[in-house]
Image (tube, rainbow, N blue to C red; front, side, top):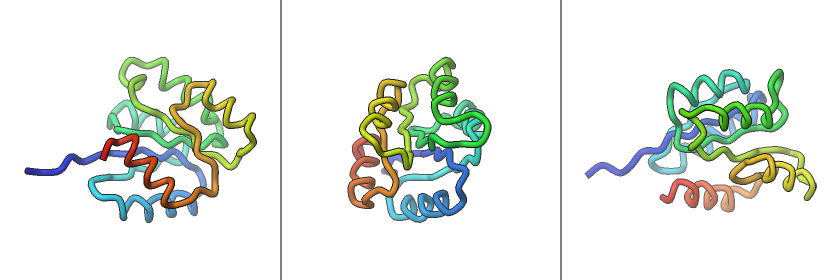
Length: 126
């Protein structure tokens, strides 16, 4: 019997952060990471690929993470996908704003690897 496989979309314009996330996901069984360098690209990938989980940077060129979340929530084909904010904005007010905007969770950079891995497993129910 095959184990389930999960697709995760990471929307991030910083190449180093994208590479770090790629390295992390290589160590999490049954996951496949897809990257997008802009919100617009991420939205298209989400519509076409239907990922199981989306990590969204807040500070993106062009459309920001909040605008992208609003667009994803407005579409029938993507509104069911959990979107988690990933941001260096780490003040309590930033986190509250993200949750109030509709992000399923809010992860601050830099994050603790073990806690991040546990979070992924929790959301994917691995």
